[in-house]
Length: 431
Image (cartoon, rainbow, N blue to C red; front, side, top):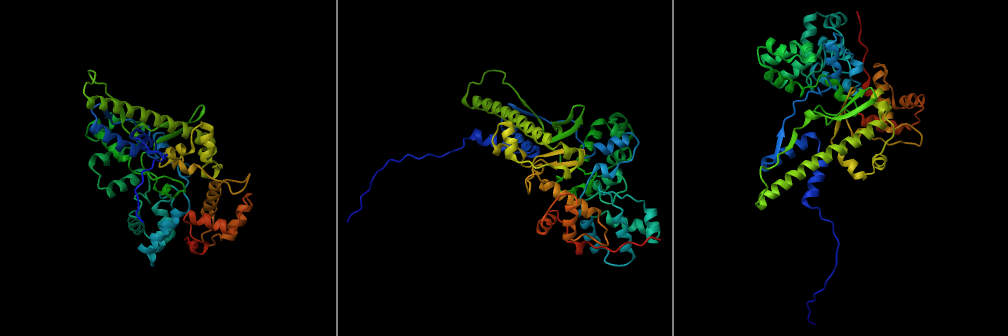
């Protein structure tokens, strides 16, 4: 039996993304850093696209409250500027176990750790620590110097200037001009660039360059351990409280300004016309991305105003579907916009995606609020008698949060909080 070839016609359907749609999705899905790289690629290939590096200083990485207080001659309030979870202490104690396994230095190290504020700064002076440890101030200073090498850099600093100086030394970027700026942070808070330039024996460009470097440092390294906190980098958005309530704006200093330069004469060659068309398309994509990002962020933060006022424990249940329906866009658009996007708030820099939270039961608190409650209860517990998962269940029930023990254990693990028996610490003896 011979096989015969047959020719048949069949109709199929498939979706294929064109280059324009692919680029639009990439732009929509990019944070400020990724978008900057994309724009640099486009500007390198297209003469009609010009980038101007933003010089805006609207955002200082979690510095707003600290510097404003310095400008007014006040001390920074650790509770107000950060709300770190208990994993900061767990992180520090793990390093102390390695650095000081035994002996009098370990006792000093534990006392210093217990004096840490949520910012990661030291809340008690070394003379008082020396008194408690029955040691000399020099001995405490020696232990403190070793603790200040714990990552992230800046932990165990005694003030903002020391915190930033530690990070500058770690990055091998401390020069005389930067050191001078750190000695005059009150003038940095006032924005007195001319006076700083004279004091530091440089020009305003040199001061601006060092200030740009300072933005990459974290003045509150302890806040990194707060559940939901974003890594320190320039945020995409800035949330501030205005007269009419919370306002959300783009962080213009996080990415360059795009200028689409019109050609002097009408393009005649196909390549020239294609370049001009592409440049216009890039400009429209950036405008659409920024507008969509602002719409989504404003809708999210409008629904989570309580969290901006009170912290993560006040997060309400919210889904991407709810935001998409309210704005009349697809849920996938919301998902792309919030991916990798962070917003700077007075309580730290938060991932926008972390502001979504489910609810375990109808009418009950959000999962994020429950996790924040667990973190708070553990942070407030007696170190000598830490709360077991069963005790956490009872404490949460007293706050109208009815949870199973296994659920509490699951959330505790999500927060990187060890079980109670591993959190137990001996009480320190005072003189």
